[in-house]
Length: 345
Image 1 (cartoon, one colour):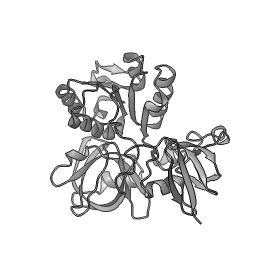
Image 2: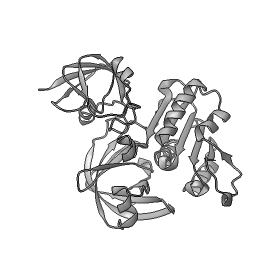
Image 3: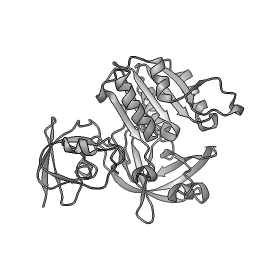
Image 4: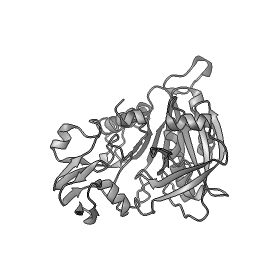
């Protein structure tokens, strides 16, 4: 049995098959709903159920609390409809416009700009036209069917020859995939992946100044968005804040500084939360989102793109709205949820 889903205020409609999630069906049919992790951990897909009934699969309370559920809010990534439904959700122009493909990819190069960060380039199959928005991600499909998500760190115009996507992978000791990347992965290895996924990408129809906020390897999609801004020749002011623990974690600091030097509209502010004595760090310290508020106390006219650890994204969303006056619908985020995050560990 299929159920019919209507999305308001856009009026878009799509069908959901039995035991399929709302989001899974939307992605399959190219409907641009907002989402991030697809695992009930980040809350990016939260929408309002106006009519109908759904059943939720496993999800985290921080993504959707019991109180929010009682108010009619749903997580489309883990909600399965039991009836026809009417959903109130902000559709995302451009999300879903590129087909989701499963494709093999070959490791071209592996570099380690920091001891626990690998920058890998994956060659795209020449016979498959893989398209994506700067900021989106792919999922690697492991041999046991498990999946791991990583954002493209280069913009679509910057794939090089042969065409390849750049990914930034942090080593999580004990991690099924990252232990393999740091221990056994080598050039010419073939990995299976699927994508593009996600609604985290630049809203190009706005002229508002931009805050790009990253922590750790959350810098990857921010780098892609920055390349896109530069490629389009946009004149919108851009404020790039990159928060890391110590100086060695700023694994592409030179790239960011050189890009800022080449872009008159870009200001780059690295922030360290736990600088080491040997760093002799004279720059900003503390929490990266608080550095933004110290410099830009009035965010009412801005757009913010935040990517990194869930705690940073959640803190920024809360404080930018409460203290900086940022409109809730101008905060775009991609929380890098680890497997531990997804399972509430």
